[in-house]
Length: 151
Image 1: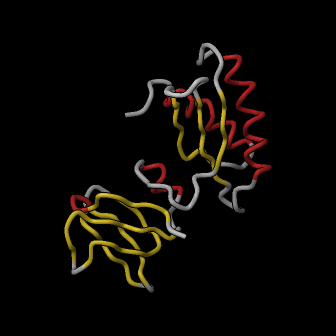
Image 2 (image 1 turned 180 degrees about the vertical axis):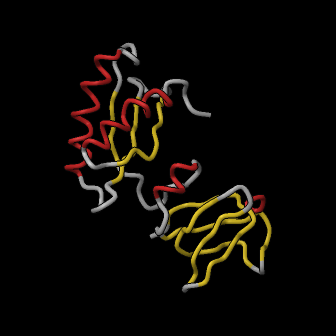
């Protein structure tokens, strides 16, 4: 379950990211740390996400968040890329990472496998679709326990 401010943070961060030719792929507010940490994950859809991308986004988002007073008190803002072991969970992530290499884990064997690798095609209500060596595979969504980016 995400923190109640996350939807608002994403609403604020998305147009800022778009103005910088970046995409917001997720956010987390870690209140168990002192000061709390707001982490916003971004990606550069045309190039690899660089430290420069993170710095530009940090500067732009920080000033906007400070004026909204969404977070009272001190906090740390972290901007990062999702990294290679990132688990995909939202529809937005499945769209953003279309064409990326993924690992799909199932709760029980499907067609003899519990671990699948391939390029992400899409996800719908029925299945997660990957491309394995030019062949599209539909893995029933009710069997899928985890989808994450691979190396």
